[in-house]
Amino acid sequence: MAKSRNPKLQLAREPAGPATPAADRTVHALAGPLRATYDAIVCGTALVQSGLIPENLATMLDDPRFASMVDSSIDDLDADASLDGDLDGGLESDDYDTALEREEALLDAEIDRLGSVVTGIARSTRVLARSLIAQALGKPVDVRALTAEGSPVDVGGRALDDVVASLQPANIAAPLRPSPSDLRQALGEAADLVHEVGLEEFDVHCELVTARKDVVELVTIPVSPERAHIALIESLFARADVAASIEDPITMMERVASAWEFDRWSVVPPPGLMPPELADFPRSVRGDEFRLVDRALITLGASVVGQIADDPAYRELFPRQHRMACAFMESFVDIFEVTDIGGSRSTWRSILHDTSYEVHEHRDPPPYHAGWIAAGRLIPFDDERHLRSPGTIFAPPDPQLARNAAATLARLEESIHSALALEAAISSDFFGVPVPRDVKPTQSRSDARAVLALVDALTADGYELDSTLTAFAKALKRQAGEDDPGPGALAGKHAKGRARKGKGAKRRRG
Image (cartoon, rainbow, N blue to C red; front, side):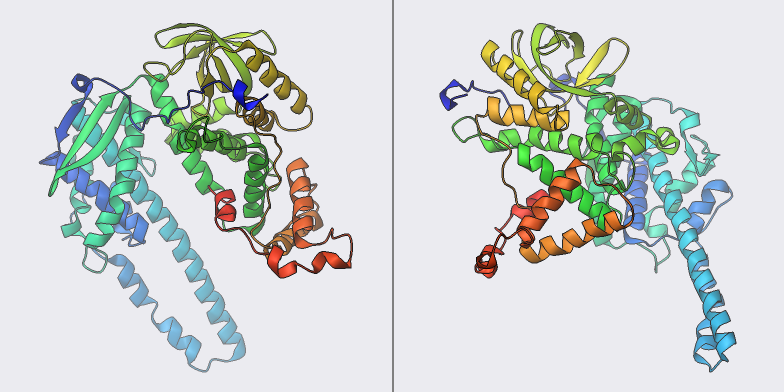
């Protein structure tokens, strides 16, 4: 399609919060019990972040008689202080090995204990976030949801009060007390936690705002359950990224390969078509969907979101995010025409299959009108309705554009994943930029050789490379010089091996 035929696209960043009238926004000043609960959330978050976790802060959730801070962890360490002396004291070889094995066993036990303690603190801060929002809204909290480590927490009784009191910074033993800097660093994560819990359990968008020095306000905005589910995609993907960020070089290599393959088919729109910053958000969502939802990592045997969908523990802790994970596994991409729209309800017709779908629109007002073209993903929500991905883009009515994009999608999805085929249609038909692009897989020739060794290790372990890793390996070989046709190919080794600044970091996002 010639550039002059490109319609003026309507790409807009999804707003961080719902666009609601000021009358629907409620500001709650955090004072008294509300402020104490907020301070406990921040303190607990800081303890988890910094690793300063006293064991009794977790066990006290099971003991309503808890009354004071006792640093049992330090006493436990003092009790085992003689072990180092034994190791340094000239033991016989067999005795030394026995002592070393004992030390390793104690270290393993300590790691396991601290892991359970961290879980207890993390769950207690979530309990407190529920309590904070419920108190602010004047609503009861589902007692079944108020549990920590499997034990119920009494909403109005001493157990929850003890959690709040024990997590006040002034009540934390001095060696473990978070510093003012620790508390400041925890503010963002604490705000994210309250925001997430509000969407998961209360159908409210929550913002924590510092009105003036030492005065904090909780701003709540009611949202529909549908919008709450859409807003929780960000939390779901963030948790999926954390789950995939294990310190395993081969898994990291697979993530880099997924990002590289998406970048081959994805482009920013030409400057004359629209500002790139407006296209960045939907493009990043589509990239996350391919990396985390669509592509199964061969080392995991499933996509990252697919693993979350199969995890019953995730369903218990984050029910709406789990519901979205399951729905994503049933989602699909296509080129659609919006045939009807009324309020939050619209009807979308697949150009390829002539099938219509009822769609709940989470933006008010919708960023499109009847007759417009949509390129993106629909996510099943219930038996009748779908939610549309925030990565969807829209264009004014253009039958030729719709037919061309649908034809590109149909042709390419026979050889590449449908999400990549959609990206190719957006790049070539909507933006007028040919794809696939020639994208270097790593920053330098030496990096390419190192990553190629990981691919070789994967095949040596008996894994069969999928199409993504096969193409990635070929690109690595070209960059590493293994496919050089003749002796002159290495002449420019040092000049050509330098990476262009910024490209590698971009491909490693997520």
